[in-house]
Length: 167
Image (cartoon, rainbow, N blue to C red):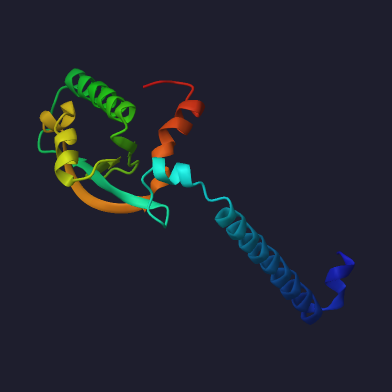
């Protein structure tokens, strides 16, 4: 047993409380320092290029991909629809109209998410209708306006640098 444990539970708890408070203070001071630094390093050109408002935010359209009414395709057709669905995602990402996409990993009717970098729900609807899986009725989309960080637009550039395998 360590000598620390021999001082008694009251003293040990006091020391532990002081250590936790000290750690919390250090974390808080670090966060304050980073907040000051981030304000000081505001990049006007980047904010302008990303169409960020004064909070660093902008409007997007979020699409929830859900299981559609026609999910009874044979395995070859389902595989073809998945491949063309992924190619469509890549096309929209390359165009800059899609900033984020990915599947949900649980087994529910909710299959995936898109975040579109377009101005209106109507524009996003037109993009979703270009998806072969939507055309086939394998998926349906539910679209919502959303307010999020303008930095999301940088995800594709970063992702390309860490993606070893292409779809």
